[in-house]
Length: 111
Image 1: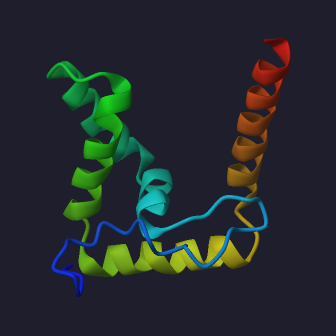
Image 2 (image 1 turned 60 degrees about the vertical axis):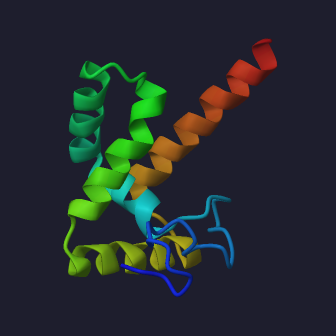
């Protein structure tokens, strides 16, 4: 989708208005990374096989999956981002996020 400035919309700016109750801002692109995690991981592994590091391969993999979705699927992800930014997240996502924060906290306090 083209933006008014002539650039391509990759969905990064959707959640600039505010963070969710968990302190994370969601946009349609980050929602794609969550909801289509298996596709992103498969594409990331393909790119790693071509010589990219896992870190360097993630964004291009996410972009490929995002761009491969239908306009309706992208809109659905944008709507989901709005829901997650203004309300509560699904239970399994809450658990995963708390575990991630706990690991970061433990790692920070050990050093």
